[in-house]
Image 1 (cartoon, rainbow, N blue to C red):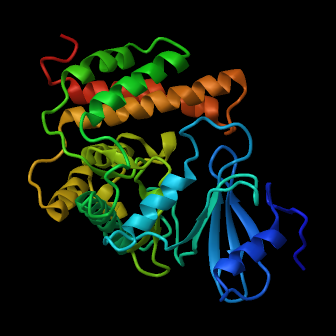
Image 2: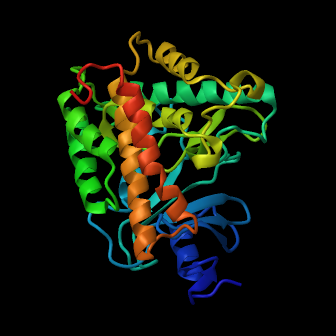
Length: 350
């Protein structure tokens, strides 16, 4: 029986009695009392399955405590998914958003629970070999559909800034590099100097996910097709090739390093090459010119700085992951691979 007392669920607490009353006031079709199970937490937005007798929901809330102004923006997650519901992009159906923290201590939103599978191994070993390429084909085409959404028509014109996306991102991650660096990595310094001088002239603006990859989509329970794109915490308006290049970083990371696909036998595993994945995206997007070395170098630079931040947290003892120190070493590895991409460019390092 649910009570008004906060009940421990996994590592977090939900006042299930008041929450049940609140949800039923807005959705009187709900039956029974909710059972809750936490499925994520830590430094992310705590997420819970809510099971009523007749409906399965998901609740996602801000973590407790002092937050940075732009961090854990559950309102933005809710807004972008609600806006995309009828735009041809598979997302969960939003149920409600609550800004008042009085009920659960922080802002939260509730959405329909999708029925499907989430895989975190990029090689998709759980799938039949013939389904792996199909899943990656859908990963590319769904991303193209996201980037084709009419921003104004979806009501998202003020969801971010138009233009100059790479300039702002390079400045942001260069600043982050200087704040988090634990050692000298000349390739990162060289990238920070080269990238702002070599931004392509194309300055399109679309909705971007910010962390689009195989682990952030849900596949159909039995078919290799995406039923939901998840984790929109980093979404904004930006250049579509930032998303495409970020997705392709897994082809520059080995399975042993961070679960990538670099060095595997693609044909034997039933997985596409990076070039084949990009071609699928370009065809679906209806464009002919794909990524330039700049885009891939930027994506690896950004990822390298992120890994250096993990290394910094490992040194000061605040890292959430037990293998943070090992993962943090990838900052220099990825910077070197970005340098390799640019090695044929005469402007690279003079």
